[in-house]
Amino acid sequence: MTARDTLDLTVRRVIRAPRQKVYDAFVKPELLRQWMGPRGFKLTALEMEPSKGGQFRLTMQHRHGDKSSVAGTYKELTPPERIVFTWKWDGEPMAAVPETLVTVTFTERKGADGIETEVVLLHSGFPSADVRDSHNGGWQGGLNKLADLTDARGTAATLSLIGTPRSTYVRTLRMAMVEKGLEYTFDPTRPHTPPVDAISPYGRVPAFRDGETALFETSAIVRYLEETFEGTPLLPPNARLRAQMEQWVSLINCHGYDAMVRRYVLQYAFAKDGAPDRRAIDASLPEMKQLLTILDKAYGTRNVLVGDTVTMADLFLAPIVAYLLMFPESKAMLDQLPNLTRAHKAIAERESFKATMPTLD
Ligand SMILES: N[C@@H](CCC(=O)N[C@@H](CS)C(=O)NCC(=O)O)C(=O)O
Image 1 (tube, helix red, strand yellow):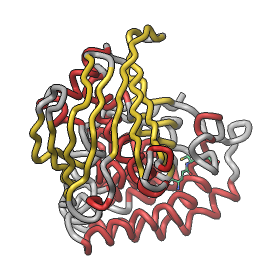
Image 2: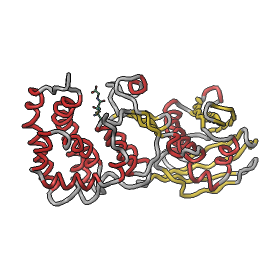
Image 3: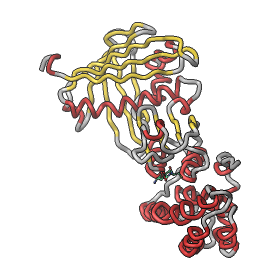
Image 4: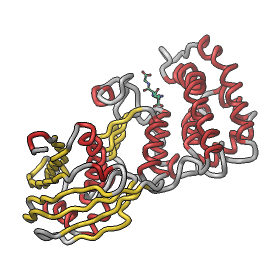
């Protein structure tokens, strides 16, 4: 196979950091160790001799066990401008991929927010489009981690959450970020606006980005955070509890939000001339009571819906209950439901709840 028969992958990233700092992250083992590999992977072994003709060998391991090793030879190191190295996978199934070549160039410039570096990573020599494309996610994830490491904003350089703070779903996701200790950039934008529509096909919030990875649907995003970041787990540790958690999330998504928020809270929030639509409110009450009673029973003597720590299910419910406490019929129902009231008081004490309180003027 000649170079003309092979395919290339180019990945670009602008990082708000000086070029030397970004370059160093490629050649200093204590720095490379912190970012090389997709999100969720760590380097469990690294040997490197970053000089022309020197070699490297590294092993990446996912938190759930998957492992891959790669080795290569440095062809060029021109600090802080350019690095060229070969790339050869070891172990099944990637060992079948022939040796490829990685060329990284670093260009510094003055951006609107200070000095920034454009990293252009050209990975060349792939035998097929499938193999090339399978490397894209890996490098994108790696460059996200590189940006987190070298940009003074940390993960807020790559993680951004778009959505109005009053949305219960947006608050759920913001609570998840706080629970996991993740810094992020918050863009308090309403549904059906260009930044949201660019990610969410229904224009709904929250919309989310991790670098080039764009996601919508709150539970999918929380799952992504769980798979890719350390920090407090928000999914229970075993299949039975995870399924139970999913059951509550699904119930809230499919029935709870509609009955409790769309057909009730929003009637008060968007009341025309200060007079809520009584028929709509009255029609939502039986279903709301049924749902709240089910949830009260599910909490029982615990303050969490599943297992013994806060999970995504509690984070889906808390912002809804916070609104229900503000309106008369739902407040009266909650006054009759001691378990749900007690569990809500407990979650309302958490930093994640306090730090995400929307302003309602
Ligand atoms: N299933 C979606 C629901 C998101 C959603 O409905 N968000 C509301 C705000 S709480 C929204 O964007 N509403 C605007 C609309 O429905 O047009 C998720 O889990 O993220």
